Image (tube, rainbow over all chains, first blue to last red; front, side):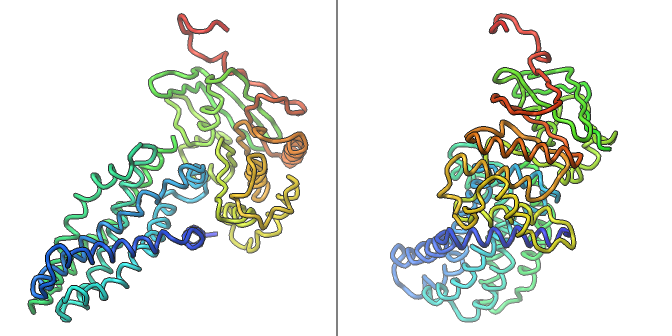
Amino acid sequence: MGGVTRFMHIVKRDLHLAMRQGMDSLMVVMFFVLAVVLFPFGVGPEPNVLARIAAGVIWVAALLSSMLSLERLFQTDYEDGSLELLTLAPLSLEIVVLAKITTHWLTTGLPLIVAAPLLAVLLNMEPDGFGVMIAALALGTPTLSLIGAVGAALILGSRRGGVLLSLLILPLYIPVLIFGVSAVDAAIGGYEVNAQLLILGGFLLGALPLCPFAAAAGLRQAVE
Amino acid sequence: MNLFTGKDLVCLRGERIVFSGLDFGIDAGGVLVLVGPNGSGKSSLLRLMAGLLGPMSGTLQWNGEALTEDPEAHNGRLHYVGHLDAVKPVLSVAENLEFWSGLRAKAGEGDTGAAVLAALEAFGIGHLAAVPGRFLSAGQKRRVNLARILAAPAPLWLLDEPTTALDKRAVAGLERAIVKHRETGGMVVLSTHTDLKLDAFQALDLSDFAPKREGGWAA
C-alpha cells in the first residue's frame, strides 16, 4: 500500500468519525453564522455601514470558527492512545498530520465557504465582491487549518489548551486576514485583485510543506 | 533469522535516570519478560524499543542496523500494546480493527476483513464485531487491542502489561497467541505483574540497572 492510499485511509476514517460524532462540523457553521449575525445588532442596521465592514466581519468570524474545532484535532487521538499507534504506523507522521488537516478543512473550512455568500447577502455586501471572497476563502481557509495544526500539536497534554491555542495561533492568522479582506475590498472598489490572491496562494504553498513537519515534531514530543 | 539487540542503554525521564548500562538481545522465537518494581522503567524500555522514546545514550539494532537509520521500517515490523487501548467509541469493533490493519496492509492485500474476524475469534470476541466501542468493558477493549496485533502480522510484539483487565480465559488466549507467534519466528517483549505460562523465556530485572540512590527504599 502506497503513501497516497494510506493517506486516503486515514482521511476516510476521520471523515467517518466526524460523521458519527455529527455535531462538530454543524456547530462550527452555526457559530460562524451567529457571530456574523451579531454585528448588525451591535453596529446598527444601516446598510452602508454593514456593506463597509462585511468583508472584515466575515473573515474574522471565519478565523474564529475555524479555530473552534482545532483543539480536538489531535486531542481525542492523544487521549485514547490512537496517536501513539499512528506514530508507530509504517508511514511518516507528516502524512498522518496532513491527512488530519485535510479532514479538518473538509469538515470546517469547506462548510464556511458554502455559508459565506449567504452571510454576505445578509450584510449587504456589494455583489462584485462575492466571487473574490469565495476564491480568497478557498485559498485562505486551508492555510488556517495548516497553521492551526501546529498549535493543536503543541498544546497536547496542557491544561486550558483551548485558550493557549488561541494565543499561539491568532497572531499567525493576521497575514491571511489582511490579504483576505483586502482582496474583497479591492474587488468591490473595482481594482485588480490578482496580487492579493497570489499572496494568499503563496501562504498556502508555503504552509503546505512546512506546517505538517512542525506539527509532526510537536506530536513526537507529545507521545514521548 | 531476526535479531533485536540493545546495547548500553541509558534512559532519562524528566531529570532522573531510570536505568543505565542496560543490554538485551532477542532472536527469532524468543521471549523477553521485563520484571521490576513500579517505576523501574519497564514501560520506558518498551517505548524505547518501539522508538516512541529516544535513548539518552546507547544503541538499539535490528539485525545489526540501528533503528534510527530507518524508523519507518521498524514501525512496519513491530506491534505495540500500551496502557491505552485506542478503541474509538463511535466505531464498531470490526471498524476499529479494520482501520489499524488497513494502515499496515501491503500492496495487493485488498481485503482485511477475514483476518480481522479471525483475530477477534482468537480472543473470543467474534460476536462483538458489530458493537460500537463505547459499549465495551475494560477487559473487552483490551481484547480488541490484542486482536489488533493478530489482524496484521508483524515479527516483534511489544506488550506493556497486556494482561491488565483480562479474565483467565483471555489470558489463556494470549498465551496461545504468543506460542503461535513464536512458532513462526516472532519475538515478544512483555512486562507483566501476573504470571503468564511461557516456555523458555529470558527475564530481565530492571532493578539491576537502576542508579544507586541514597536514602530511598532499600530493595
